[in-house]
Length: 129
Image 1 (cartoon, rainbow, N blue to C red):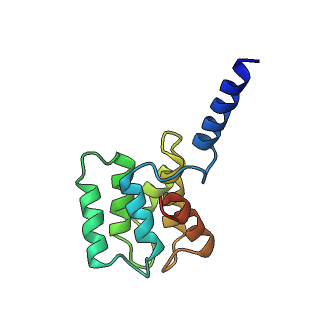
Image 2 (image 1 turned 120 degrees about the horizontal axis):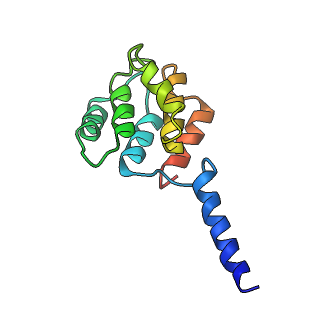
């Protein structure tokens, strides 16, 4: 019986890691990108583009995060044709975090601005939702 509380604690911790939407953004870069997408209307603003360029140039950002930031920087009503294969690859990359795969899917489905269900997913990526 002594192992039961430990097992339950570990099971809960594992659930937070593997169940989409239960964990917060994995990094500041993902949180910043979720915030930008929440307010997106057709394309990122000038200050948002600066934030995205900072992510692209940040050595602490993962390659996946830099790919997402680059695709967001190129948004103009929807993902650019050049970025779509990169986003599809991220969506199907088992090594990518759930947040990265979800963001890639949101960018691929984008039509001027995120849908209501996509905004709900973005809120789950942000720390203060």
